[in-house]
Image (cartoon, rainbow, N blue to C red; front, top):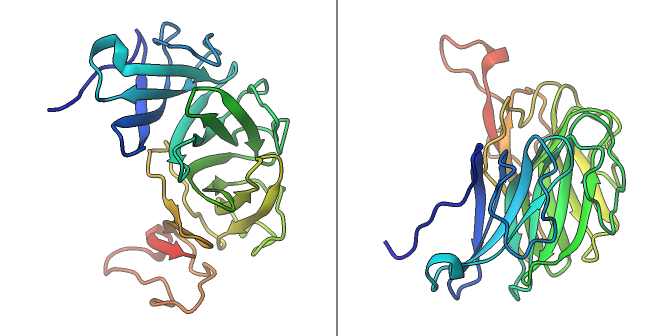
Length: 265
């Protein structure tokens, strides 16, 4: 064991994502219900309430208290949870995505300054020195949650799922919600103040919905494309040049209960 530590307070605190810069520096995202969560040089020192997201930087070459470089809450008075985290190619910034039900989520230089309603996704950029660069809502009037994030030189890519019929789409691949919960894929410009594209992705049934989100970060990018994965219960999921063109049932299972993984570019 080269490095291992607790981090948390008196409540329920969970880590959900980690990225590294190649020199022993690790950035961790998660969420906690502890008013006494141990912050260090935070951009948000206070606990907002319910669950707050957190972002922490660890120097795994150090020991004890010196290993925690910074740690900050991120959230308002509602339920704020971070699920995915990414780092840029120069290790200058980290990017976090998650969910918020707070109508006072601490947005900064946002692409969407106010909550759409119910749960929204949030996207935040934090510098390697622990400063908040931007934080934005993303969502419509329904239930929208961000689960994955990736970054390249052209922008920041996020995915998740939505029940909103008024998700703020931009040059969409799919204009409307196909039904129930759809996946979404969106791309922010490097400044984080506008969406380059935003689209639904789904059929008539549920895509990517789970009662409790777990940390999967189901997205990655190359220089010009985003790749996402999830699952679908739709027999009309929008495929393109597919390996498998239709949803198949196993013997003894109803089609309405069957779910298949999807992958796309």
